[in-house]
Image (cartoon, rainbow, N blue to C red):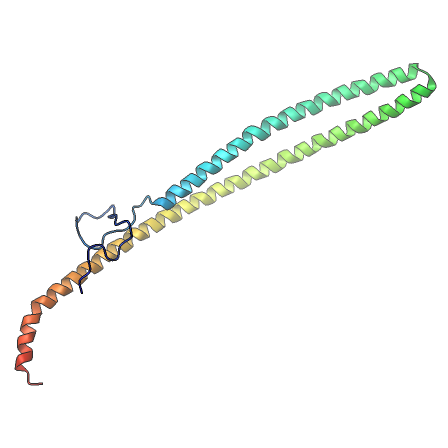
Length: 191
């Protein structure tokens, strides 16, 4: 039973990049730069664009927020010292109330300092996230080498298919070559 030239190959029927025999049966391995490498490249590009977008948003926001926190701290500190001065010059009852307000302002100042500390912790977390991003980029590079190895393996399987088909063709020729003499020999042998 003879195989057609499209048997045993991938559905797209594309010839391998290294095959030089035109029309030889069994060709059809995927090219070395197949869709898996293209998908990996698109994933890496998308990931880089996403990381850049986050950097463009987070870093300026952190800087602006730190500036506002510093300005607010200075303004609140000035306000508390001014209120304390006014409280010392006003009536004792009003002065007591202003001291309480001043204490509340100091608590607010402490809260702003805590916010500033939290921003620093967030900055450290972003730095750790960047390290993880670098590790992921290395892993993507490893995936690219795996894709290249798979493409080479596909190419080698295509070559094996070609050689198997050549062996089939040679066996068919050999069968045709010895069929007549063997039929003649069968007619001479009594069993």
